[in-house]
Length: 329
Ligand code: TRP
Ligand code: SF4
Image (cartoon, rainbow, N blue to C red; front, top):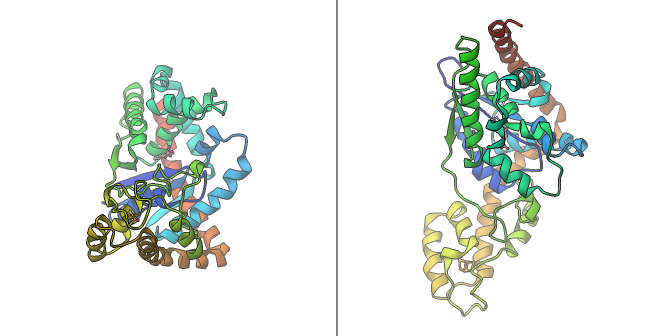
């Protein structure tokens, strides 16, 4: 593994993964695992910051997430996959970093301000929620990661991580931590069935674990060009979600055929959806096959989780030695 740059990223176990998560993050991780020394972890403590009332839900999603990762193609030979709460060192580093992180840095964090408004039905006026990015900084610098693949919404957190790392090195006069860089993926944008952002809370998702018949049914209910009432009306593929899916899942010939046919009302939405759904189901088949395999051997999944824990801990223990030596406490 030496010589390769190190990548670290995490996901909160708040639900089964859907196509939005896959194209927005996971597909990129799967690509990166071939070029980098990768650490990917399930951020269960981060899930707890906003879902502290339902820890049992988080626990079941940890397992689901590992199954989703493995079936989508993250390889346990290529990357270290682990669960955040298994590595208690994250909590110690979080504590120490919290000593040196000024509260105003956290209060002006745009993600924090956003979430407080968006999740107004939850009481998020907690210390843990404000400190979310400090825990995230601990996750990242614990592994001295060079690169952190994230979505745009997480860029402020990586920026804050750099500032915290810099402040630590400055205060304790030792270059313990490198400053990590955010890596924005080129992602294909997939929207939900109703053309809003794909999200569990909108109930508009296609999940990686959805069987073929569920996928077909969901696709048949997808929103198309809203102006197109009848099959004889011409449609506009450029504002149609089904067409966006075609661009991801169908071959170029079909994509090029559909756009003009839709504009001339030569193809109906029912047919068009059927064609897309077939290709989507085909693309999802290998993922589902792998999921069946892993579901049928749970010990194998346990082994992968504990092998990841061992590898992650080896790094974390070493980092904490450096940290304690620098602070001398
Ligand atoms: N905050 C990230 C998210 O919600 C999850 C996360 C936790 C993370 N720790 C991380 C991402 C460290 C990258 C690096 O998506
Ligand atoms: Fe969309 Fe296809 Fe219907 Fe055109 S024919 S509006 S591309 S579903």
